[in-house]
Image 1 (cartoon, rainbow, N blue to C red):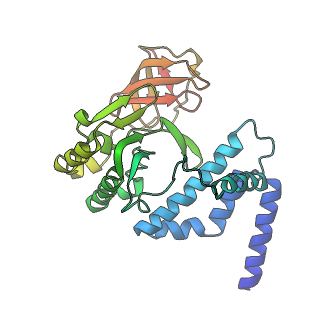
Image 2 (image 1 turned 60 degrees about the vertical axis):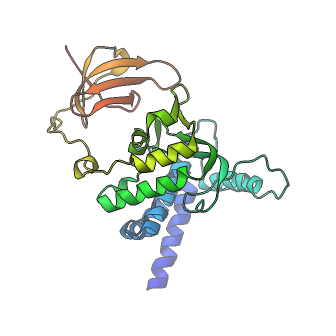
Image 3 (image 1 turned 45 degrees about the horizontal axis):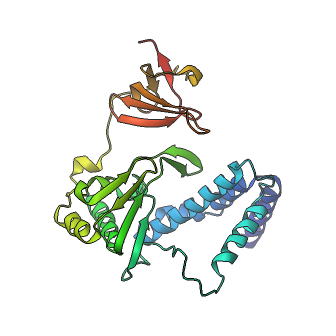
Length: 292
């Protein structure tokens, strides 16, 4: 019976691959195979890393499917593209003018002249799954210290304003670890959203000596008494302007401080009463406009 169930499962996956796009098929395989459930229930550091790795793979598949230049959005096409990319990575040449990509755990004991730490965002580093306890958060902070001390000359800390998480495009906030750095040791590039340390030796020493101990109140995210009404209906935001009062189903009430028309995605910077400033993609954000 177990073998028959397994065969039926695989045949079902084959049908999904033929009829569905890469992301839908990959998500179904990850869910119905039990892989995501097993990894999610493993609360060790290694288990959390594996779970987030699979989520990152699904995010990459989602970006592939959402790319308007991709005509073939099948899982087979995605795997072919990945195989081409990894083929370049495996090229055994003598050219040292390249970037070494690795996890922080793999970088322990190594040093490089220039180090880039990417993904410095809340819920990513520190991981959302490590915010439930003080000990887990301190472990993330120690891991961050390992990362910053790999740099011999220059250290770059970068974060995305938005990224795909769990198959959905979400706005991002800079990691709390960036706020814990003495501003005298960093230079911020606002245009490129890149934070570059100007003195890695002094910076690392300062980070350790001035490290903030996170209190329980810091671990718990901002709370609000706001609850969206049952009849909440988002407004047409094509005419949204600075100074308008808006309502969001999660963040509550706020005031529009700026509208960014640059690029393909129109954004609004909103100062919410309970959550502070948030930058929202208007194509995704559900905002209800209220008369001032």
